[in-house]
Length: 439
Image 1 (tube, rainbow, N blue to C red):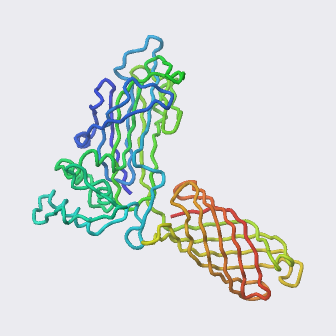
Image 2 (cartoon, rainbow, N blue to C red):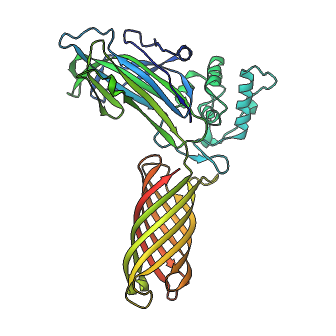
Image 3 (cartoon, helix red, strand yellow):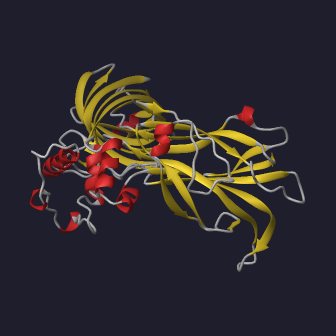
């Protein structure tokens, strides 16, 4: 993991395309980007677009300290402070990235093509002056109707191919700048295909206007915008991004509040005053291993239920993610270790019997990564009754996971167990909830 810090120190008296930074090399990498705004956040924009300045940065974790100020603004007649609005816009930065089969044993957000790898390598070598390696249109991969990838205009690479080259580590930030200069890809293709993060700053004009929907809106004007394009090589499961404030930089009487999704308000910032913030984004890489602990009830069923009563159950789980090349859902190899304390009255089992089981199976997720994910887990098990030795059997588990963070999730499951070698056959169910940790 690499963290790249850089500093910004901007004043709003500069035109939107201008930027001053303490890092002269980064300043040379900046290019303007128009960002269109809408008025669905209770604000009315004097100009509905701003120009964003940002470099392309190759990193998994990016943290940019920035200064937001009111320097150069004409003082309002009604008060000596200003309200600023700061909006964070993430483009191509989904919370959960859709994953598809890639190279065997490894999932990627876009499947990799060996012929495309050779084609991009040839382009990179030619940009670096190695004219012994050349590429032609005939060298590029061909796609079926479902994977159409047709370059637009003079582009030699289309958006899907560009993304694959970045994920494979072939197209780095310096190579991308050379491609833009040489016309291998257009600025529009890069902006459409790559993840980007933008912070847009607006100041209020001290008045409100009523829109056609009869709603009063604060009238704001753009100051400037900054951000970065994020190039991440390798597989990823999603993005997390945001904006945090340095509390020590808030002047007395000023406040910084989150008033909507990725929308912040700086209230009562004195004329000429400033605050310091951190713009940050992180590419979340796969965590293939996970462990879990679940607690709940063991419920005897069938003939077994006539001789026993509901007791307690606990299960430990261990999983290893595996994304099959020809199987769209995500699959995990899973092992379980369970123990159930069943209260009984009859001869089978004896009162307060203990049942231990060890199982192995494949856990199949029923949907792509999301806040809620369903799964099915069939297993082959060995059961040990404290009065009857080892028995064979199996179980089918249906569950639902609720993601709490990239590493933690709640796990809810129902399991049906069959101890097939028991006479008579013993059946019981488990209803459990617990925590799952991925690493």
